[in-house]
Image 1 (cartoon, rainbow, N blue to C red):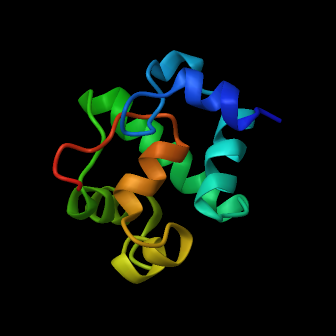
Image 2: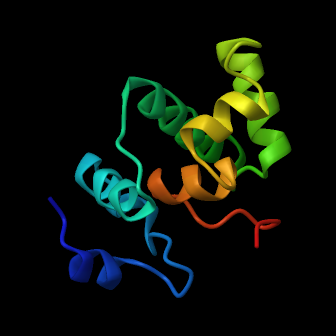
Length: 109
């Protein structure tokens, strides 16, 4: 497991991973722990989707874009705000992107 100190060394001023290439499952677990989230298969499915979105578009999605992309890829049952909020409380795009090792979405506070 990655320590909080090591995670801080790898993070930017907003607490997001400074270099997306440094991301790993251990880093995801450490960020999730900081967010109070225990990762399940459902979380990993969305984290993978977030990383696919970043690879395709070169940026982290805003919440609406994440919902739409999830709906396209995983169907309406998972591509909705309630489902994503259940996995990543607060702001699914911000919290999910952080755990996925991506930059902070532009439109997130």
